[in-house]
Length: 638
Image (cartoon, rainbow, N blue to C red; front, top):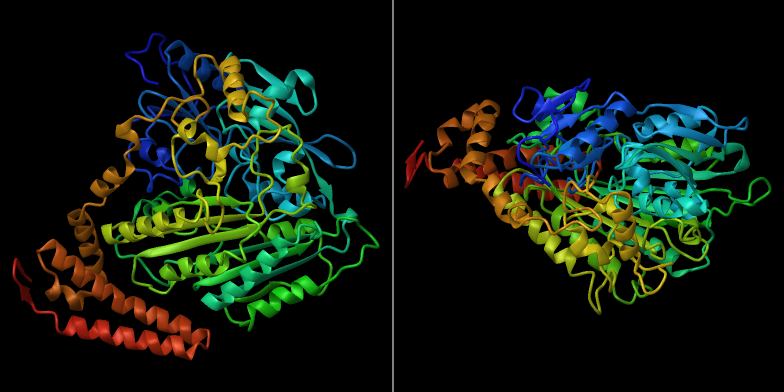
């Protein structure tokens, strides 16, 4: 939604940044900026409201000028849907609502502002011996997280964060703050829409009141966290345990199990052409955030827990944890790897939920192509899914020179006893609760064409595992709002919304569209195409592939790499060629030689002699390639 010159002039705000002015780019930046470069993350104004008054002023200004408002509390929205473009406004709430108030004497009900990052929110609960299910990304803020469900490691044992919300304070398009409560007839439609109907589409939520759990009610809880060096066969064995778990629909709800696969950190396999994310981390840490982990090898992270749901007196059966350890095989007690949490003794759940949090702002300081799918398949074993997905992962992991880095997370949420499944009472719009397994397949890539093409082709092949008869992961294409990879919600709504608890003849999505028209008839909260009832995104904005190819112009990338490589490898300067393609090849070979040395070091640390030998051989090949590189080639001179 855009306009001609303002009908009503822009009022004053405490903190505002306008497109084209100093510091705008720093504040415009978000997690998706380097991946979605086609103009969707370019609001005209970025406003940090001081409180309700300025939020309401921004809404009234937008309404009067037929503009739209995007709402961002902080963290990440993978497809850029927490931003906007044209003459529209972004409300940045990262520091606006930081209230925290216990509502009862036993500290089981808390009202909290949406500006809290998950790590800080978790720590405030843990200080009282309290916990609640939430996600694993420390820098994600509560506002967007709770509206997309709040999926996390406690999904089977306690459900989703949204399941624990009792009350929401929201400022709607009429500029009026109001409270909506779970179970209240007059509030049920808006409550339903806000939790699971696409974040920021129905108003600006400011606070949520959440029912939390007490450590003392689960005194025998146990956890397991192990960091293994990546190995394809090890991953297959660990995933087989998960699929066996998923096939047992009566598996106790106490058990949660999640696997993460991470490529080596960029300090192990460095990039020679720094991207936007790396520049933001180094130049603007106050905007980017502060990391807690700085280096890791390619690894598999196991997260598992037993929640002691029944409390004191419930016996702990360790056989499931033993099975995981047996599948994982040898545990290396070296830097970056080994057992971080063991099940040899009880641990407070508030402590365990802190152990499940990933401490960094982002996995890799690179652009990415994202996929997240849910599955309700009961034939994953028969369809060979674990072999398939391990092969897909290994295609990237087996080649450290393809310019790609993976962040994969696979978790079991299902079963008849799962609280994610049982809590599906129709009070929220959150969909696909009957799913068993959630698979996040994120392929980060270096900012040059061959890496992007590898990542894009890899994801296109992954897409074949869902959405058709005989698909290995799921015959439906089930997606989640928090893991979106497109900006056409209206067009793709069948993938994001099921029809559980839909009242015939209306579908769940049709109900959401009706609520949207009622509470936001002018589309004030329709800032982009990832909105309920939004018109299709303009072709110029949705044609990401062509725009990405333009952004990844080889000449520009080669020139960036040239400057970095000359300072890092002065001995190779004579080999640098004016011809851009030949130059890129030479730079890649030089970088590969250096990276091989890093890879050898990590393999030696892991005592993997076979891998180290292969890496030494490959490094020798690259060094020979450099030695044989002529000083002058057709098309240019050194």
